[in-house]
Amino acid sequence: MIRGSLVALVTPMLESGAIDWQALDDLVDWHLECGTHGIVPVGTTGESATLIVSEHLKVIEATVERVKGRVPVVAGTGANATAEAIELTRHGKSAGADACLVVTPYYNKPTQEGLYRHYSAITDAVDIPIVLYNVPPRTACDMSADTVARLAPNENIIGIKEACGDAKRIEEIRQLVPDDFILLSGEDAQTLDMMRDGAVGTISVTANVAPQLMAQFCEQFLAGNVEQAEAIDAKLQPIHEILFVETSPTPSKWALNIMGRIESGIRLPLIQLSNQHRQEVRNRLNEVGLLG
Image 1 (cartoon, rainbow, N blue to C red):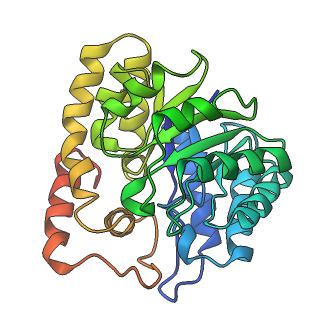
Image 2: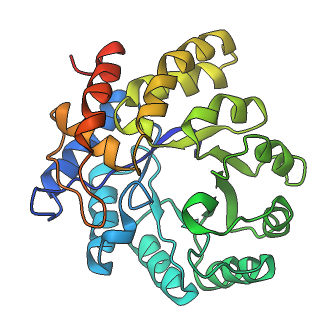
């Protein structure tokens, strides 16, 4: 079930920084209407690093409750302490998430053996499907293809979101893991190349602002309509680029604000999009018809 366009959902906030629970419900409804294939709350784009634990858990609960089983919910439950990741993952299971997305431990810079033991400890403690998440530009930790292959036989580890910046890493992993191991892109601009090399979808930042286009892109590729997928991808590339002009999710939240979907709240140390980039974001959204 975990394939296609899964949105790395922003956590909508009021100007005060408080979570906007109504906007969260509304975003989930919008994604379901637009054909998004899965919801990923409280990942990097969901500002997991700025939420306190009680908020983190409540966002997962609220998302699961709103989705009501219509698409998979893959809850972000990673942490830099293994014990905390276990507790978050336990809560993800108790909240009813279909799977958990567990990022490599940030800041600690563990060895490959440390990564293996970290994920093994989580799966020993919690019986829920786990999607590994490798994003070294954020974590200062790069999980090698060999370590992924070492973890792949664990029946609770079902796949990986790969965001190392090298699209060919997907091909390297594919050669080492079973055919049913789920490979997902974590780099919107590289998703087409990753799907050519074996990925079955993406956990996407761009899906926050262009959910229908991202869903159509994945559907066309997975149906074998590669030329149609390439045409949609070409249309989306300027959006992929501009949504990373500053640290994500800053551009995505500002885009959603001008689209009328959320207020402009974001939490320190993240701040609202700089004035110098706002017009270009607006221009690119206009070009693909996202501002009506």
